[in-house]
Image (cartoon, rainbow, N blue to C red):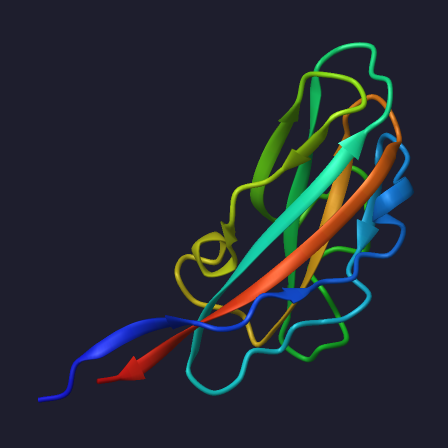
Length: 145
């Protein structure tokens, strides 16, 4: 009987339009849709944002929006997001500081199963515009050993 092991793919940049200068109380979307194929079990998403001068400690949140047809997604970019799946929230307690997120599991947000198409969006609720921002993605595969 074969055993199945988890293997991590290569980390790759995930472009989120305007992330580096995202204003407070606004949402920014990835410029591409991720459509898993092959033996992909999950995607890990990580975001790193630097906040400007904040008045009170707040946060930013990372969401996944799904689509069956790669055309109609689960939300039309409402702010704050209404129908996306929350991957996680990152506290931003200090001004002019970079706050990297942990690796968020997309499959976990969808009850363990990746949707056929999804898009990552970031909502800035830090109280200030971001002064820098990056995002990464990493596929997680099932391999037979």
